[in-house]
Length: 360
Ligand code: TTP
Ligand code: MG
Image 1 (cartoon, rainbow, N blue to C red):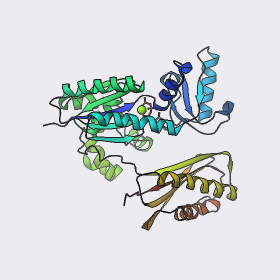
Image 2: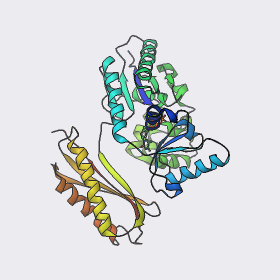
Image 3: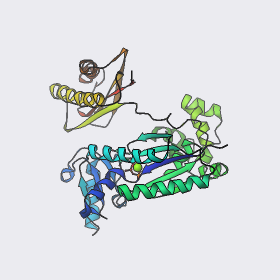
Image 4: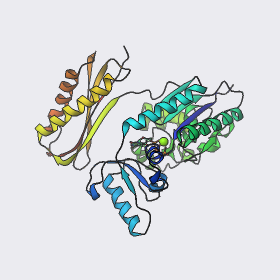
């Protein structure tokens, strides 16, 4: 019996919630993210709705760039972009309500991020039944939450996830086992979860653009090129994935980051910001289901965007703020001298996160 797995991903999630809550914004291009400050703002875009995406604006783009694109569109006589700040609490509340709604109908679910969910539908008799159930679920989310989502259905989590992205927004894509190969081969390698800009570049150099090209590499080629990740990629290119719903992407870290108003090497200021971020992270940790953490990681981005992550894993699990602050500050020291920052580049952003979280 083949498994039947669905992946549900909300459309333009943060922006769609804002649009729903403020009827005056209906139909307008919306960007949710940092304050653009008339073009000199320094953060990034969290998300853009589909109207704003038509202007070329997308997640993780510098907010100043999004501003520039919005001004260009305005000059061309197109609608003005509405810029909004993020309201994490409201998005998390909506996310939990959606989770509860899915859980009312299905037992085996995994929340993979704030706006995506896997559902194991193998108990249904056919893919056709799965499609009907998913259409019903989409309808229910629409009527209760006034939000659209896209769903992919396939024989495993990998195919379901790639399929949910295939006809966004408001799509439903069903890939049966005998269609997997034909579905995957023409797709760009970037569509495989886990292939980021780095792997993409490495493969691009070998003239590999789509999944069909990728399948020309043997297990050994891929192992040599990418190590252990190469082995897993070999399977993914063939649409294979045995992981169970509930196994992927459990919350693995809790983190916060901040882009400074001005690039700086003022150590007092940076230590103070790190302390505040540590407290925010700790607060989220104490409200989470986790009892301990073992790894502390800081991220430091310089003015030229060079970014370094530095981690320390403790021998014993910890649960107190002092340990978090102490380790974070130790990791930060070397960025004020030649060890981590020989050219004394000013710092643009710092981040801190805790990992290896445990519930006991
Ligand atoms: P996504 O599902 O990646 O994006 P989306 O829901 O906005 O758009 P779509 O799925 O229709 O393509 O991410 C879910 C939310 O997570 C998104 O609304 C905002 C947030 N997010 C960020 O804050 N930064 C990011 O870089 C990304 C990718 C998402
Ligand atoms: Mg989404």
